[in-house]
Length: 362
Image 1 (cartoon, rainbow, N blue to C red):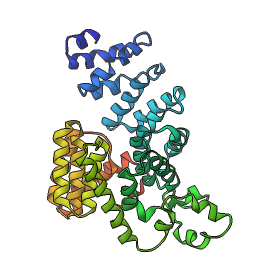
Image 2 (tube, rainbow, N blue to C red):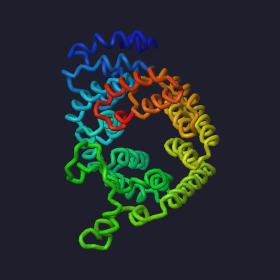
Image 3 (cartoon, rainbow, N blue to C red):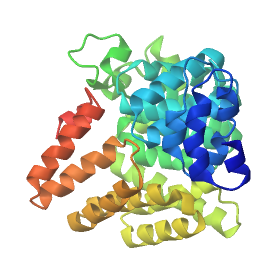
Image 4 (tube, helix red, strand yellow):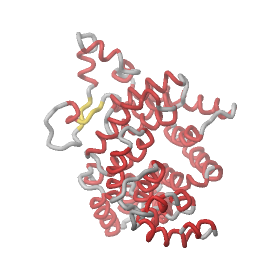
């Protein structure tokens, strides 16, 4: 396998690395080839080369193994590698993205708790990109308390980061929405939510709750009325900041990826699609993400045929599990009178994402 790497033969290296990984004597040498294999998209070889009888000694190899399993649609394999890697690196912040992906594919599982533990252990030292991502992750988990922490830290680092304006524009309606079990309440399902805004209004100036609500960023605004106007105001500020940074050439890759979504939220769909095309040309490795966003925008516009065709191209490029993409495909198929195909996609998705409220609603 090492000779194949030196000779620039990734297919051969991918085939031979499996034999090397089978032995405890050579598995770590085999894992050192993972970056080369990943560069050449030999994801199947990386996933098949994990020998969990031997702990990982290099963090990068463990992370690539997790990513490879997810790319191949093997959530269980990713969980196994993650469990082993966390024994060696129990508080490693670079696991946050992987934890989010696994937790999103296993909603309501232990992984949400592991995400919380590592996030809290590292929030003081996270950079702006990870903090912005954690705001999104936390709201997706219905954990606004974690999002508030990330928001406050991001604001301290960069008070005009566009993510600070995008968050209330996108998540303003769920700024105080928790899963009931996180509040210590009995529930039939782990996916039952509770909006605390009425409770906040009742206790805003009542001791000891007043001190708590004082700590919530944008708390009074998000708990009050005028939601639509408030969201438009923050969206406008987000777009203005993105455009200002674009003129000064200070847009990061993360901010450039945010721009199309902000345009779409502002109902500027044609500009949003054009911005995605620009991103694809500048960052070819983002093509899968760009295709998915195109499909989302087409769905928002009720263009089922375009959404369906874009999702077909997206799924032809990746086997990575994406419950939101699966749900979009089911919706597009149903609207195009492809009911039997939609049922098969829904059945397969329920197998991949057991217990998910999102797919059970299809």
